Image (cartoon, rainbow over all chains, first blue to last red; front, side, top):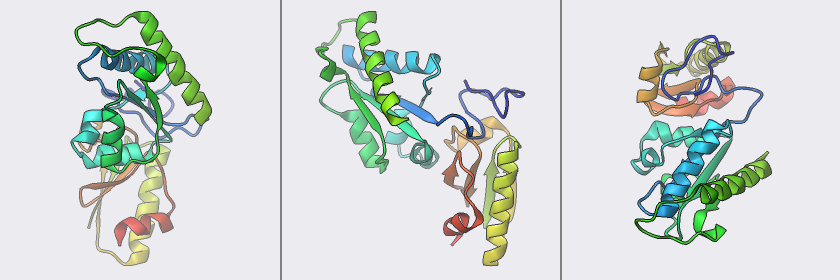
Length: 140
Length: 76
């Protein structure tokens, strides 16, 4: 959760405030589907958020066509989309919403096989987090 | 036209309100300006970064302070 306007007031929930001059606004989205690779995408996104790399944002909101959420994504400095598998659902949600500017990571591109009913490992999450950091670094 | 500034009242929120009023006045538009400062209410718009501008309930810009010329494009 971001501090607001110098940190004197606490924003509710996950809203960030006042578009800092110093830091780019980085929003992170995960496909968060049902398979292991989707769980990895979700855990990686949350780890990135907790480490301060950006704010996780709701992919479902874009999929639902919530106008304010779509505008939020359009106005972010960096959108990082983490898809789990070659179905590319998260990327397609972005395209359908008309948000054309985003960085992209796909879990199965990192040598992780898609499986159902198999828990992911921390090593796999770490691998995706590392790739995401690399991609984010290239955006700055 | 209903103009809403979404933000908790920081200098950027105030600047966005100023610029929005300047744009509306320059265009000769009849408007009401409301400052929405409650974060829960702000999030009902789907906005996660402030300040933001909503025109007749539609969010037009998020996390930025456009100049009056740019804001005019949202008001026409």
